[in-house]
Length: 436
Image 1 (cartoon, rainbow, N blue to C red):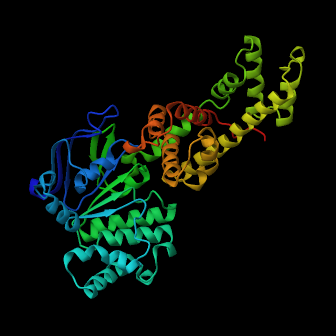
Image 2 (image 1 turned 180 degrees about the horizontal axis):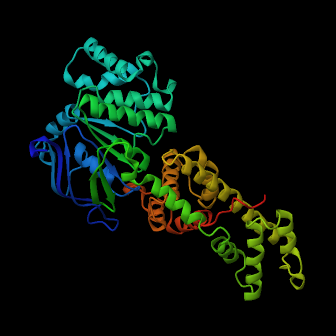
Image 3 (image 1 turned 90 degrees about the vertical axis):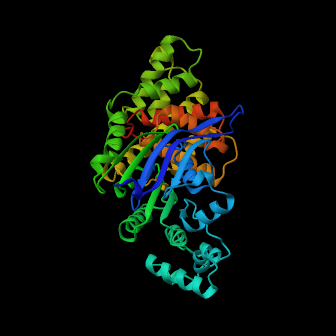
């Protein structure tokens, strides 16, 4: 393709959050990318890696510290506020994870709203909006308010709104994040159609590898840098590596079926500090019996309670009950993880939401702060990325402990470490054979 056909080009982009302050973050480093007219491109990476920040550069929301952002050959980073406003009204359509519909306006009026800035009459705006809704297959929802719609329907309205002013460029920031599996797939198919049949250039921000089978080009983002880019044939999953990600995680989790060292070490460290080496050794032997399914829950308690000289540990009953409770929790939650892995093995790209509810509850027992929908959604996202082996344990801790202002969850570092310990215990042993 010739240089003239580039619609987006980033040259030597550098960007900081809170530059010069103690919490300075170098968010983007030496970013150089080129996207052609009509391409469906994706910025792919884990939470906090910089992919959404790149989208903010392209949309004109943020300006780079240095470098240039070109749209059809024009340097967006040099636009005046008035030029930026026109660019964002006419050149770019935005699709959000949380839909961002105005709750007091009907579906029709939500879609028609961006056209207000074009000076069109109300009747023209509504006529155009109805045409878009018809194309989206939701014309029958025109009079409804957002709260009367399902998540999938709200996202379709969000996409329809992004098309209102017929922009050449559509920026989609995690558009499947709040959708169930079926609607997530429909959304990706719709974006693909807009690219191939309507000539729109689509830039997708996602951490979900299954989405990548719909795109033409992938930019892999890590720690604020584009580590590589590749053009792919849509539907060719072997190039994307999603199945390998899941397969690798499953092999790692289940390779040593009878090796429960991580679990026993975790329980022993917590409950048997100050005990003799012989007592700690025996505690691990008894714990392994339980988590391997060799003994029942009741027999597990009896061995903890039984005198040491008789082969038990001789614990007082309340401590034995606490250990039994802790081990049973790990068994139950690990079985949930095992079920999730089986689902992923069968359907590698499936989005996971409800499947994580019990695991989330178990992990967040450690967190004593207030939770919000944002924290819960972000936490689920981080856990899913760790389960899928998209991010490392260190990056998981980092995502939890970074300030919210830079894309983290704002947990204390010690809390993040404790949550990570719990999750690693679940991921490191196959407990699905244990007898509850």
